[in-house]
Length: 564
Image (cartoon, rainbow, N blue to C red; front, side, top):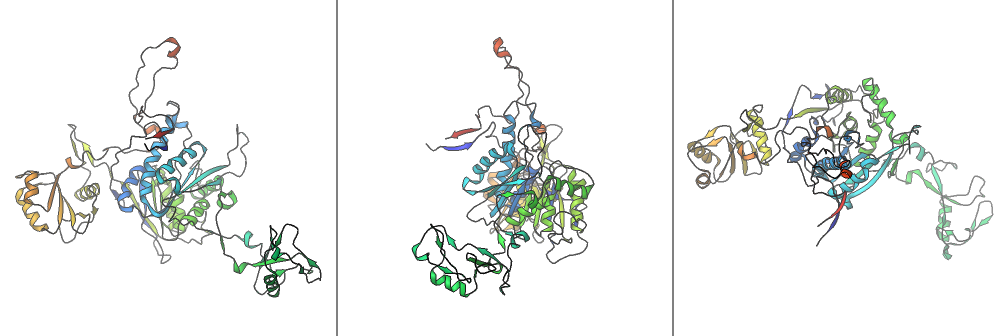
């Protein structure tokens, strides 16, 4: 009997059957620079308007294994939105909705990619265990502390919260390479050249070892004529011969007057110009909440978001997780900081946002970045002048709706090309209409194709189609109906064709018509209020009307349990 420790919650077993919708570009909202600033300008970035879970599903087929870095700043589950629900259910709802997103994010990440999540104390520890379950505990990299506030809040009841967490998870830790940070002027400023050595600035380093080794205990004669030994319990780091060699090479510093204890001269030119990141990021290094609000005011003239992230924080993440040209994804775009920073740093990006501020603030912000009019944030630090562009997409409406009699039909908002693209995606084909073969709307391999039509095909038409395809290819034919032959007979008569009827072929695939999977609990469906049967007086206080959420599975237990 195999058992594993897992995080469990009410309704965990229920997973949505997501509709993999197509993306429709609105060229009137897409934008690119009117001139090319550099040869490395990136234009094919994507801004997607719509529910982020559906958007992730829409990206899955095309971008699986291609995203180098995912940064998300999900809504923190503060509990304020859950005041009308039974205690404990809010955690279950939040975890379930996050689980659905993380599972797709894992598929989108490249093998050497990584996920970075900002979160607070309220759900951070549960989220870490959830990530362990999805990505594997061995792929957890670290928890970074970001100092988001620079001063205590005087009216705090308990502790004044000064930080958020940044969880860092690798898709595959054995293939993940964490970048390094350039040394600051403060760090390189420790190197000086007190003796005008032609090899340049240097820093004095210890020549002692914290253990006594007989071969490394000997007197060293200083230029002043005095001899010194290593203190008791220690020894020199070098042999007598090596020490003499270092003195001869002017690698040992004896102080200005030649009478100080010896020190090794470590030259700046001989050390790396980068250092590893620590797990504590102070506000002076990566910014704080007030800095990000100032960035918003400079762009839009007001405080538009409660918790925007400063550009310097995203710069740190992308410096460590990516290289120029890598693909970055943010499915909780918010104010658009990730896309703005990625653009300035020469990374490709995809952002998803459902709120109307996608149009009123994110797009105007990105236009300013592209046109070189955004002078704030990291612009000066990375020498950004403008360039590039993005494409704006919205999620297509649901493919299947009910007609006035309650029968499922293809949504009339879809034109022929959109229907072909949607069915190709549902069937696992890449939509790519051929310019030479009218029956090739998409492919799944070099020999397997798909053809979509709303017509009813006769036996004669199917025969002509089979002759056109030939025996060396296979063709999935999606049509409204076919007449003059049964499906079984068709398979025998035309072995290169597979016939499926629209919309019957996809009815059981997805949750059609579900447009909002957002983390706002107000959008979640609720079941009817159920009356509790009369009970003993002592129990009546506890057993009152109970609001039950549709996704709740009463069979689930507590937050932690063992699964056979």
